[in-house]
Image (tube, rainbow, N blue to C red; front, side):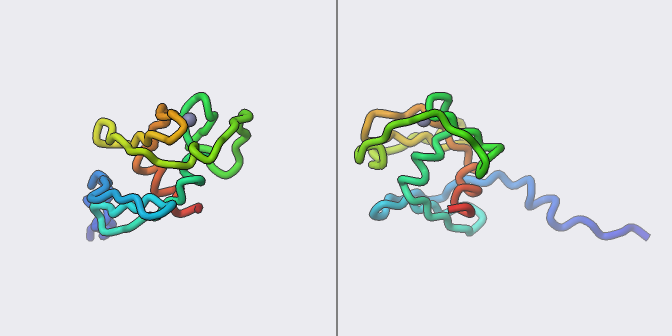
Length: 114
Ligand SMILES: [Zn+2]
């Protein structure tokens, strides 16, 4: 008799995408297409910037060593964002920084950590 292990397989292959993105105060609220919601504090989001200049490394979140990055108040202001290739979010920050590409999986993990 076949052991029943299915059920989640199909769901795991559903691509996670934001249905709605909204800036609320100092948080970015994301409603996902699987019904989950994430609230990301902008400061946390910026400090977790995964671009080379900021030294973020998504795979070692929590135990990473970053280069010295200086922030100003404007660094934590979100001017806007682009959605990249259907898999990531690229925020544009108030200090002009905008090279960080946050995959949706990364955003979900950040929201869980923060
Ligand atoms: Zn960066």
